[in-house]
Image (tube, rainbow over all chains, first blue to last red; front, side, top):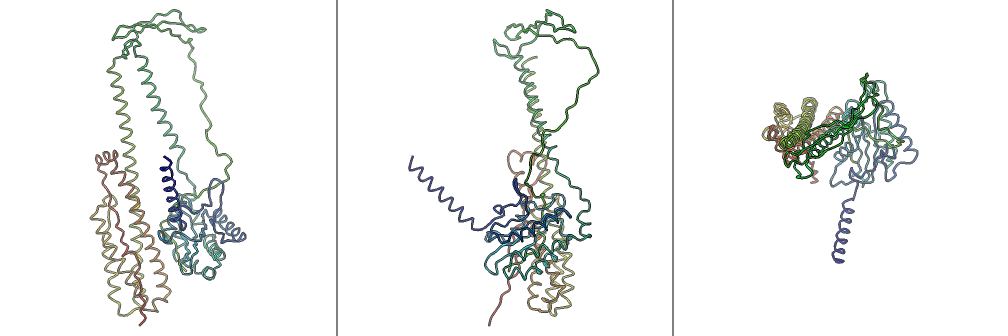
Length: 311
Length: 199
Protein backbone atom coordinates (compact mmCIF):
# COMPACT_ATOMS: atom_id res chain seq x y z
CA UNK A 1 0.00 0.00 0.00
CA UNK A 2 2.72 2.42 1.05
CA UNK A 3 4.71 1.56 -2.05
CA UNK A 4 1.73 2.30 -4.22
CA UNK A 5 1.33 5.61 -2.50
CA UNK A 6 4.95 6.44 -3.16
CA UNK A 7 4.59 5.62 -6.82
CA UNK A 8 1.47 7.69 -7.00
CA UNK A 9 3.22 10.60 -5.33
CA UNK A 10 6.13 10.31 -7.71
CA UNK A 11 3.71 10.29 -10.60
CA UNK A 12 1.99 13.41 -9.34
CA UNK A 13 5.32 15.16 -8.87
CA UNK A 14 6.30 14.23 -12.43
CA UNK A 15 2.99 15.52 -13.71
CA UNK A 16 3.40 18.78 -11.84
CA UNK A 17 6.89 19.31 -13.19
CA UNK A 18 5.59 18.59 -16.68
CA UNK A 19 2.94 21.23 -16.21
CA UNK A 20 5.63 23.57 -14.93
CA UNK A 21 7.73 22.88 -17.98
CA UNK A 22 4.92 23.42 -20.41
CA UNK A 23 4.01 26.66 -18.65
CA UNK A 24 7.11 28.24 -20.14
CA UNK A 25 5.15 31.27 -21.22
CA UNK A 26 1.70 32.66 -21.00
CA UNK A 27 -1.14 31.13 -22.95
CA UNK A 28 -4.40 33.10 -23.38
CA UNK A 29 -6.08 31.25 -20.53
CA UNK A 30 -3.35 32.12 -18.03
CA UNK A 31 -3.13 35.83 -18.77
CA UNK A 32 -4.49 37.63 -15.69
CA UNK A 33 -7.83 39.18 -16.59
CA UNK A 34 -8.20 42.76 -15.39
CA UNK A 35 -11.93 42.23 -15.13
CA UNK A 36 -13.37 39.86 -12.59
CA UNK A 37 -15.52 39.59 -9.49
CA UNK A 38 -13.26 41.88 -7.51
CA UNK A 39 -11.63 44.06 -10.11
CA UNK A 40 -12.65 46.20 -12.99
CA UNK A 41 -9.59 47.48 -14.78
CA UNK A 42 -8.30 47.60 -18.31
CA UNK A 43 -4.66 46.67 -17.96
CA UNK A 44 -3.06 43.28 -17.57
CA UNK A 45 0.57 43.89 -16.77
CA UNK A 46 1.80 41.05 -14.57
CA UNK A 47 5.48 41.88 -15.05
CA UNK A 48 5.08 45.57 -14.31
CA UNK A 49 6.24 47.29 -17.48
CA UNK A 50 4.13 50.30 -16.68
CA UNK A 51 4.86 52.88 -14.05
CA UNK A 52 1.99 53.95 -11.82
CA UNK A 53 1.68 57.21 -13.72
CA UNK A 54 1.60 55.48 -17.08
CA UNK A 55 -0.99 52.98 -15.85
CA UNK A 56 -3.14 55.82 -14.55
CA UNK A 57 -2.92 57.61 -17.90
CA UNK A 58 -3.88 54.46 -19.80
CA UNK A 59 -6.76 53.80 -17.43
CA UNK A 60 -8.07 57.32 -17.97
CA UNK A 61 -7.87 56.89 -21.74
CA UNK A 62 -9.67 53.52 -21.57
CA UNK A 63 -12.38 54.88 -19.31
CA UNK A 64 -12.88 57.83 -21.64
CA UNK A 65 -13.20 55.56 -24.64
CA UNK A 66 -15.68 53.36 -22.81
CA UNK A 67 -17.80 56.26 -21.61
CA UNK A 68 -17.83 58.34 -24.77
CA UNK A 69 -17.90 55.87 -27.62
CA UNK A 70 -18.56 52.56 -25.86
CA UNK A 71 -15.29 51.03 -26.98
CA UNK A 72 -13.51 48.63 -24.66
CA UNK A 73 -9.74 48.65 -24.84
CA UNK A 74 -7.68 45.97 -23.13
CA UNK A 75 -3.98 46.57 -22.66
CA UNK A 76 -1.95 43.41 -22.21
CA UNK A 77 1.79 43.47 -21.59
CA UNK A 78 3.50 40.16 -21.12
CA UNK A 79 7.12 39.25 -20.47
CA UNK A 80 6.74 36.25 -22.75
CA UNK A 81 4.20 33.85 -24.16
CA UNK A 82 4.18 30.33 -25.47
CA UNK A 83 5.69 31.16 -28.85
CA UNK A 84 5.89 27.54 -29.86
CA UNK A 85 2.16 27.10 -29.79
CA UNK A 86 1.05 30.59 -30.69
CA UNK A 87 2.05 33.31 -33.02
CA UNK A 88 1.14 36.95 -32.45
CA UNK A 89 -2.07 36.76 -34.44
CA UNK A 90 -3.45 33.54 -32.97
CA UNK A 91 -2.59 34.57 -29.43
CA UNK A 92 -4.38 37.90 -29.78
CA UNK A 93 -7.34 36.32 -31.50
CA UNK A 94 -7.76 33.67 -28.83
CA UNK A 95 -7.29 36.10 -25.95
CA UNK A 96 -9.69 38.59 -27.52
CA UNK A 97 -12.47 36.09 -27.89
CA UNK A 98 -11.73 34.37 -24.59
CA UNK A 99 -12.27 37.58 -22.68
CA UNK A 100 -14.86 38.91 -25.10
CA UNK A 101 -13.50 42.42 -25.35
CA UNK A 102 -16.10 44.92 -26.57
CA UNK A 103 -19.87 44.78 -26.55
CA UNK A 104 -21.50 41.54 -27.59
CA UNK A 105 -23.85 43.27 -29.99
CA UNK A 106 -21.44 45.47 -31.88
CA UNK A 107 -18.02 44.00 -31.16
CA UNK A 108 -16.41 47.35 -30.43
CA UNK A 109 -13.32 46.15 -28.66
CA UNK A 110 -9.61 46.70 -29.14
CA UNK A 111 -6.75 44.67 -27.73
CA UNK A 112 -3.36 46.35 -27.46
CA UNK A 113 -0.90 43.54 -27.05
CA UNK A 114 2.77 43.71 -26.24
CA UNK A 115 5.08 40.80 -25.50
CA UNK A 116 8.69 41.17 -24.51
CA UNK A 117 11.44 38.87 -25.67
CA UNK A 118 14.88 38.95 -27.15
CA UNK A 119 15.43 41.79 -29.60
CA UNK A 120 13.87 40.87 -32.92
CA UNK A 121 11.31 38.61 -31.27
CA UNK A 122 9.35 41.20 -29.35
CA UNK A 123 5.74 41.60 -30.45
CA UNK A 124 3.33 44.46 -30.67
CA UNK A 125 -0.16 44.13 -32.06
CA UNK A 126 -3.36 46.15 -32.16
CA UNK A 127 -6.14 43.63 -32.53
CA UNK A 128 -9.56 45.01 -33.44
CA UNK A 129 -13.02 43.65 -32.85
CA UNK A 130 -15.45 43.06 -35.69
CA UNK A 131 -17.23 46.37 -35.12
CA UNK A 132 -14.04 48.45 -35.16
CA UNK A 133 -12.78 47.46 -38.56
CA UNK A 134 -14.41 50.41 -40.31
CA UNK A 135 -12.77 53.04 -38.12
CA UNK A 136 -9.58 51.26 -37.25
CA UNK A 137 -8.55 49.73 -40.52
CA UNK A 138 -5.50 47.51 -40.57
CA UNK A 139 -3.66 50.37 -42.15
CA UNK A 140 -4.68 52.75 -39.36
CA UNK A 141 -3.43 50.23 -36.80
CA UNK A 142 -0.21 49.89 -38.72
CA UNK A 143 0.18 53.68 -38.64
CA UNK A 144 -0.37 53.77 -34.90
CA UNK A 145 2.34 51.19 -34.46
CA UNK A 146 4.60 53.25 -36.71
CA UNK A 147 4.02 56.24 -34.44
CA UNK A 148 4.91 54.24 -31.36
CA UNK A 149 7.78 52.38 -32.95
CA UNK A 150 10.40 54.88 -31.89
CA UNK A 151 9.65 54.27 -28.20
CA UNK A 152 9.08 50.56 -28.52
CA UNK A 153 12.29 49.83 -30.33
CA UNK A 154 14.18 51.82 -27.70
CA UNK A 155 12.73 49.62 -24.99
CA UNK A 156 10.37 52.26 -23.61
CA UNK A 157 7.41 49.96 -23.78
CA UNK A 158 5.21 51.99 -21.45
CA UNK A 159 5.64 55.13 -23.51
CA UNK A 160 5.10 53.15 -26.69
CA UNK A 161 1.79 51.82 -25.45
CA UNK A 162 0.83 55.30 -24.30
CA UNK A 163 1.54 56.55 -27.79
CA UNK A 164 -0.78 53.88 -29.17
CA UNK A 165 -3.47 54.90 -26.69
CA UNK A 166 -3.03 58.47 -27.84
CA UNK A 167 -3.49 57.34 -31.43
CA UNK A 168 -6.62 55.40 -30.49
CA UNK A 169 -8.13 58.39 -28.70
CA UNK A 170 -7.25 60.68 -31.58
CA UNK A 171 -9.03 58.41 -34.03
CA UNK A 172 -11.99 57.40 -31.92
CA UNK A 173 -12.86 60.52 -29.96
CA UNK A 174 -13.68 62.65 -33.00
CA UNK A 175 -17.28 63.72 -33.55
CA UNK A 176 -17.49 61.64 -36.75
CA UNK A 177 -16.19 58.52 -35.07
CA UNK A 178 -18.49 59.14 -32.15
CA UNK A 179 -21.45 59.46 -34.50
CA UNK A 180 -20.56 56.21 -36.21
CA UNK A 181 -19.83 54.30 -33.05
CA UNK A 182 -22.84 55.40 -31.09
CA UNK A 183 -25.25 54.98 -33.99
CA UNK A 184 -27.98 52.65 -32.85
CA UNK A 185 -26.30 52.29 -29.49
CA UNK A 186 -29.03 50.46 -27.70
CA UNK A 187 -27.53 47.92 -25.37
CA UNK A 188 -29.44 44.70 -25.51
CA UNK A 189 -28.82 41.66 -23.42
CA UNK A 190 -29.36 38.02 -24.05
CA UNK A 191 -32.57 37.15 -22.27
CA UNK A 192 -30.93 34.89 -19.75
CA UNK A 193 -33.62 35.43 -17.20
CA UNK A 194 -36.27 34.32 -19.67
CA UNK A 195 -34.29 31.23 -20.53
CA UNK A 196 -33.82 30.27 -16.88
CA UNK A 197 -37.49 30.92 -16.18
CA UNK A 198 -38.47 28.63 -19.05
CA UNK A 199 -36.22 25.89 -17.77
CA UNK A 200 -37.53 26.23 -14.22
CA UNK A 201 -41.09 26.16 -15.48
CA UNK A 202 -40.48 23.02 -17.52
CA UNK A 203 -38.82 21.29 -14.60
CA UNK A 204 -41.73 22.13 -12.32
CA UNK A 205 -44.16 20.91 -14.92
CA UNK A 206 -42.43 17.56 -15.14
CA UNK A 207 -42.21 17.20 -11.38
CA UNK A 208 -45.87 18.11 -11.04
CA UNK A 209 -46.96 15.60 -13.68
CA UNK A 210 -44.84 12.96 -12.04
CA UNK A 211 -46.22 13.64 -8.57
CA UNK A 212 -49.76 13.56 -9.89
CA UNK A 213 -49.18 10.20 -11.54
CA UNK A 214 -47.55 8.87 -8.40
CA UNK A 215 -50.34 10.14 -6.12
CA UNK A 216 -52.90 8.58 -8.41
CA UNK A 217 -51.07 5.29 -8.31
CA UNK A 218 -50.70 5.39 -4.52
CA UNK A 219 -54.39 6.12 -4.08
CA UNK A 220 -55.32 3.13 -6.20
CA UNK A 221 -52.90 0.67 -4.67
CA UNK A 222 -54.57 -2.00 -2.56
CA UNK A 223 -52.97 -2.39 0.89
CA UNK A 224 -53.76 -6.07 0.91
CA UNK A 225 -52.90 -7.48 -2.49
CA UNK A 226 -50.73 -4.63 -3.78
CA UNK A 227 -52.52 -4.26 -7.10
CA UNK A 228 -53.54 -0.77 -8.12
CA UNK A 229 -57.22 -1.46 -8.55
CA UNK A 230 -58.78 0.34 -5.60
CA UNK A 231 -61.85 2.17 -6.64
CA UNK A 232 -64.40 4.28 -4.83
CA UNK A 233 -67.60 2.30 -4.50
CA UNK A 234 -69.69 4.31 -2.10
CA UNK A 235 -70.16 7.56 -0.24
CA UNK A 236 -71.98 8.14 3.02
CA UNK A 237 -72.48 11.63 4.24
CA UNK A 238 -72.34 11.85 8.02
CA UNK A 239 -72.66 15.56 8.35
CA UNK A 240 -73.62 18.06 5.68
CA UNK A 241 -71.32 20.98 5.15
CA UNK A 242 -72.85 24.40 5.79
CA UNK A 243 -71.68 27.92 5.18
CA UNK A 244 -70.51 27.96 8.80
CA UNK A 245 -68.89 24.57 9.39
CA UNK A 246 -67.21 21.72 7.54
CA UNK A 247 -69.04 18.49 6.81
CA UNK A 248 -67.91 14.91 7.09
CA UNK A 249 -68.35 11.90 4.83
CA UNK A 250 -67.21 8.32 4.66
CA UNK A 251 -65.85 7.02 1.38
CA UNK A 252 -65.79 3.31 0.70
CA UNK A 253 -63.04 1.92 -1.52
CA UNK A 254 -63.03 -1.62 -2.79
CA UNK A 255 -60.27 -3.49 -4.53
CA UNK A 256 -61.46 -5.00 -7.78
CA UNK A 257 -58.79 -7.65 -7.53
CA UNK A 258 -59.25 -9.13 -4.05
CA UNK A 259 -62.37 -7.44 -2.77
CA UNK A 260 -60.55 -5.75 0.11
CA UNK A 261 -62.60 -2.84 1.39
CA UNK A 262 -61.52 0.21 3.30
CA UNK A 263 -63.38 3.21 4.58
CA UNK A 264 -61.82 6.63 4.55
CA UNK A 265 -63.12 9.61 6.43
CA UNK A 266 -63.19 12.73 4.40
CA UNK A 267 -63.87 16.28 5.46
CA UNK A 268 -66.16 18.22 3.19
CA UNK A 269 -64.98 21.81 2.92
CA UNK A 270 -67.20 24.57 4.15
CA UNK A 271 -69.50 25.94 1.52
CA UNK A 272 -68.50 29.24 0.03
CA UNK A 273 -70.57 31.89 -1.59
CA UNK A 274 -69.39 32.66 -5.04
CA UNK A 275 -67.99 36.15 -5.27
CA UNK A 276 -65.86 37.98 -7.79
CA UNK A 277 -62.25 36.86 -7.84
CA UNK A 278 -60.11 39.31 -5.93
CA UNK A 279 -56.84 37.44 -5.71
CA UNK A 280 -53.77 39.58 -5.70
CA UNK A 281 -51.19 38.93 -8.37
CA UNK A 282 -47.64 38.02 -7.63
CA UNK A 283 -45.20 40.78 -8.03
CA UNK A 284 -41.59 41.44 -7.46
CA UNK A 285 -38.54 39.62 -8.64
CA UNK A 286 -36.47 37.11 -6.81
CA UNK A 287 -33.04 38.28 -7.80
CA UNK A 288 -31.24 41.51 -7.45
CA UNK A 289 -27.62 42.42 -7.76
CA UNK A 290 -25.93 42.86 -4.44
CA UNK A 291 -22.87 44.96 -3.81
CA UNK A 292 -21.01 44.41 -7.05
CA UNK A 293 -17.61 45.95 -7.38
CA UNK A 294 -16.25 43.81 -10.20
CA UNK A 295 -16.74 44.09 -13.91
CA UNK A 296 -16.66 42.05 -17.04
CA UNK A 297 -15.94 42.50 -20.68
CA UNK A 298 -18.94 42.93 -22.91
CA UNK A 299 -18.61 39.68 -24.84
CA UNK A 300 -17.27 41.06 -28.11
CA UNK A 301 -15.81 39.05 -30.93
CA UNK A 302 -12.97 39.65 -33.33
CA UNK A 303 -12.53 38.43 -36.86
CA UNK A 304 -8.80 38.99 -36.82
CA UNK A 305 -8.56 42.66 -37.74
CA UNK A 306 -5.71 44.93 -36.81
CA UNK A 307 -2.01 45.05 -37.40
CA UNK A 308 1.03 43.73 -35.65
CA UNK A 309 4.76 43.75 -35.91
CA UNK A 310 7.71 41.92 -34.56
CA UNK A 311 10.71 43.99 -33.60
CA UNK B 1 -59.71 2.81 -13.24
CA UNK B 2 -57.76 -0.22 -14.17
CA UNK B 3 -54.16 -1.19 -14.22
CA UNK B 4 -54.09 -0.82 -17.98
CA UNK B 5 -55.06 2.84 -17.69
CA UNK B 6 -52.05 3.40 -15.53
CA UNK B 7 -49.82 1.69 -18.03
CA UNK B 8 -51.26 3.83 -20.80
CA UNK B 9 -50.56 6.92 -18.77
CA UNK B 10 -46.99 5.85 -18.21
CA UNK B 11 -46.59 5.17 -21.93
CA UNK B 12 -48.06 8.56 -22.72
CA UNK B 13 -45.72 10.26 -20.29
CA UNK B 14 -42.79 8.42 -21.85
CA UNK B 15 -43.88 9.50 -25.32
CA UNK B 16 -44.25 13.11 -24.22
CA UNK B 17 -40.80 13.01 -22.66
CA UNK B 18 -39.36 11.48 -25.82
CA UNK B 19 -40.95 14.11 -28.03
CA UNK B 20 -39.68 16.91 -25.80
CA UNK B 21 -36.20 15.40 -25.93
CA UNK B 22 -36.36 15.05 -29.71
CA UNK B 23 -37.41 18.66 -30.11
CA UNK B 24 -34.55 19.76 -27.89
CA UNK B 25 -32.00 17.77 -29.83
CA UNK B 26 -33.39 18.90 -33.15
CA UNK B 27 -33.17 22.52 -32.09
CA UNK B 28 -29.62 22.03 -30.86
CA UNK B 29 -28.71 20.60 -34.26
CA UNK B 30 -30.33 23.53 -36.04
CA UNK B 31 -28.44 26.01 -33.87
CA UNK B 32 -25.12 24.34 -34.54
CA UNK B 33 -25.86 24.11 -38.23
CA UNK B 34 -26.60 27.81 -38.31
CA UNK B 35 -23.33 28.50 -36.56
CA UNK B 36 -21.54 26.56 -39.27
CA UNK B 37 -23.34 28.56 -41.94
CA UNK B 38 -22.50 31.81 -40.21
CA UNK B 39 -18.86 30.79 -39.97
CA UNK B 40 -18.94 29.93 -43.65
CA UNK B 41 -20.27 33.41 -44.33
CA UNK B 42 -17.21 34.83 -42.58
CA UNK B 43 -14.91 32.66 -44.68
CA UNK B 44 -16.51 33.87 -47.88
CA UNK B 45 -16.47 37.50 -46.77
CA UNK B 46 -12.77 37.26 -46.00
CA UNK B 47 -11.96 35.68 -49.34
CA UNK B 48 -14.18 38.16 -51.12
CA UNK B 49 -12.37 41.04 -49.48
CA UNK B 50 -9.16 39.64 -50.83
CA UNK B 51 -10.60 39.26 -54.32
CA UNK B 52 -11.70 42.90 -54.23
CA UNK B 53 -8.26 44.07 -53.21
CA UNK B 54 -6.39 42.17 -55.91
CA UNK B 55 -7.23 44.41 -58.94
CA UNK B 56 -6.02 47.52 -57.08
CA UNK B 57 -2.87 45.73 -56.06
CA UNK B 58 -2.17 44.56 -59.60
CA UNK B 59 -2.96 47.97 -61.11
CA UNK B 60 -0.55 49.65 -58.72
CA UNK B 61 2.16 47.10 -59.38
CA UNK B 62 1.70 47.25 -63.16
CA UNK B 63 3.04 50.76 -63.45
CA UNK B 64 6.06 50.02 -61.32
CA UNK B 65 7.47 46.73 -62.53
CA UNK B 66 8.54 45.68 -65.98
CA UNK B 67 8.99 42.17 -67.23
CA UNK B 68 6.87 40.59 -64.53
CA UNK B 69 3.74 40.35 -66.63
CA UNK B 70 3.50 36.63 -66.02
CA UNK B 71 3.26 37.07 -62.27
CA UNK B 72 0.59 39.73 -62.64
CA UNK B 73 -1.52 37.83 -65.16
CA UNK B 74 -1.22 34.75 -62.97
CA UNK B 75 -2.69 36.69 -60.07
CA UNK B 76 -5.57 37.99 -62.17
CA UNK B 77 -6.30 34.57 -63.60
CA UNK B 78 -6.24 32.94 -60.19
CA UNK B 79 -8.54 35.66 -58.94
CA UNK B 80 -11.00 35.04 -61.76
CA UNK B 81 -11.01 31.34 -60.98
CA UNK B 82 -11.37 31.88 -57.27
CA UNK B 83 -14.29 34.27 -57.56
CA UNK B 84 -16.06 31.90 -59.93
CA UNK B 85 -16.53 29.36 -57.18
CA UNK B 86 -18.96 30.11 -54.41
CA UNK B 87 -20.64 27.59 -52.20
CA UNK B 88 -24.14 27.74 -50.89
CA UNK B 89 -23.73 27.51 -47.11
CA UNK B 90 -26.47 24.91 -46.87
CA UNK B 91 -24.67 22.67 -49.30
CA UNK B 92 -21.08 22.42 -48.20
CA UNK B 93 -19.76 19.06 -49.28
CA UNK B 94 -16.32 17.57 -49.32
CA UNK B 95 -15.93 17.99 -53.12
CA UNK B 96 -17.32 21.53 -53.10
CA UNK B 97 -14.97 22.59 -50.39
CA UNK B 98 -11.97 20.94 -52.02
CA UNK B 99 -12.67 22.84 -55.26
CA UNK B 100 -13.15 26.09 -53.41
CA UNK B 101 -10.02 25.59 -51.37
CA UNK B 102 -7.91 24.70 -54.39
CA UNK B 103 -8.98 27.80 -56.28
CA UNK B 104 -8.35 30.03 -53.28
CA UNK B 105 -5.00 28.42 -52.58
CA UNK B 106 -3.94 29.11 -56.14
CA UNK B 107 -4.67 32.76 -55.59
CA UNK B 108 -2.78 32.69 -52.31
CA UNK B 109 0.24 31.28 -54.07
CA UNK B 110 0.02 33.71 -56.97
CA UNK B 111 -0.17 36.56 -54.48
CA UNK B 112 2.82 35.34 -52.54
CA UNK B 113 4.80 35.23 -55.80
CA UNK B 114 3.78 38.84 -56.37
CA UNK B 115 4.94 39.74 -52.87
CA UNK B 116 8.22 38.00 -53.56
CA UNK B 117 8.69 40.17 -56.65
CA UNK B 118 8.42 43.18 -54.38
CA UNK B 119 11.82 42.40 -52.94
CA UNK B 120 13.44 42.75 -56.34
CA UNK B 121 11.96 46.16 -57.12
CA UNK B 122 12.94 48.89 -54.68
CA UNK B 123 10.51 51.31 -56.32
CA UNK B 124 7.68 48.89 -55.59
CA UNK B 125 8.85 48.34 -52.06
CA UNK B 126 9.06 52.04 -51.36
CA UNK B 127 5.83 52.96 -53.12
CA UNK B 128 3.43 54.21 -50.50
CA UNK B 129 0.28 53.09 -52.27
CA UNK B 130 1.60 49.60 -52.81
CA UNK B 131 2.79 49.47 -49.21
CA UNK B 132 -0.66 50.42 -48.00
CA UNK B 133 -2.28 47.80 -50.19
CA UNK B 134 0.07 45.07 -49.11
CA UNK B 135 -0.60 45.98 -45.48
CA UNK B 136 -4.27 45.52 -46.24
CA UNK B 137 -3.58 42.27 -47.99
CA UNK B 138 -1.74 41.02 -44.93
CA UNK B 139 -4.71 41.97 -42.78
CA UNK B 140 -7.09 40.14 -45.08
CA UNK B 141 -4.91 37.05 -45.09
CA UNK B 142 -5.09 37.15 -41.29
CA UNK B 143 -8.85 37.29 -41.45
CA UNK B 144 -8.91 34.39 -43.88
CA UNK B 145 -6.80 32.33 -41.50
CA UNK B 146 -9.05 33.11 -38.58
CA UNK B 147 -12.30 32.67 -40.50
CA UNK B 148 -11.11 29.27 -41.69
CA UNK B 149 -10.13 28.22 -38.21
CA UNK B 150 -13.45 29.35 -36.78
CA UNK B 151 -15.29 27.52 -39.53
CA UNK B 152 -13.41 24.36 -38.65
CA UNK B 153 -14.21 24.78 -34.98
CA UNK B 154 -17.91 25.28 -35.68
CA UNK B 155 -17.94 22.35 -38.07
CA UNK B 156 -16.27 20.20 -35.46
CA UNK B 157 -18.80 21.07 -32.77
CA UNK B 158 -21.59 20.37 -35.22
CA UNK B 159 -20.09 17.12 -36.47
CA UNK B 160 -19.57 15.87 -32.94
CA UNK B 161 -23.22 16.51 -32.24
CA UNK B 162 -24.30 14.84 -35.47
CA UNK B 163 -22.24 11.75 -34.85
CA UNK B 164 -22.69 11.22 -31.14
CA UNK B 165 -25.22 8.74 -29.86
CA UNK B 166 -28.14 9.23 -29.39
CA UNK B 167 -28.38 12.57 -31.22
CA UNK B 168 -27.18 10.82 -34.38
CA UNK B 169 -30.59 9.13 -34.61
CA UNK B 170 -32.33 12.50 -34.80
CA UNK B 171 -29.63 13.76 -37.18
CA UNK B 172 -30.10 10.89 -39.61
CA UNK B 173 -33.88 11.13 -39.35
CA UNK B 174 -33.89 14.78 -40.40
CA UNK B 175 -30.98 14.62 -42.79
CA UNK B 176 -28.31 16.53 -40.90
CA UNK B 177 -25.10 15.70 -42.76
CA UNK B 178 -21.56 15.97 -41.60
CA UNK B 179 -19.68 19.08 -42.69
CA UNK B 180 -16.20 18.90 -44.17
CA UNK B 181 -13.20 20.76 -42.80
CA UNK B 182 -10.67 23.04 -44.35
CA UNK B 183 -7.43 21.21 -44.55
CA UNK B 184 -4.55 22.94 -42.89
CA UNK B 185 -2.55 24.08 -45.84
CA UNK B 186 0.43 25.52 -44.08
CA UNK B 187 2.60 25.76 -47.17
CA UNK B 188 0.07 27.90 -48.96
CA UNK B 189 -0.68 29.98 -45.89
CA UNK B 190 2.84 31.04 -45.20
CA UNK B 191 4.47 33.89 -46.98
CA UNK B 192 7.34 32.75 -49.18
CA UNK B 193 10.72 32.76 -47.55
CA UNK B 194 13.05 35.25 -49.13
CA UNK B 195 16.49 33.80 -49.36
CA UNK B 196 19.49 36.02 -49.22
CA UNK B 197 22.42 34.78 -51.17
CA UNK B 198 25.86 36.11 -50.45
CA UNK B 199 28.07 35.09 -53.33
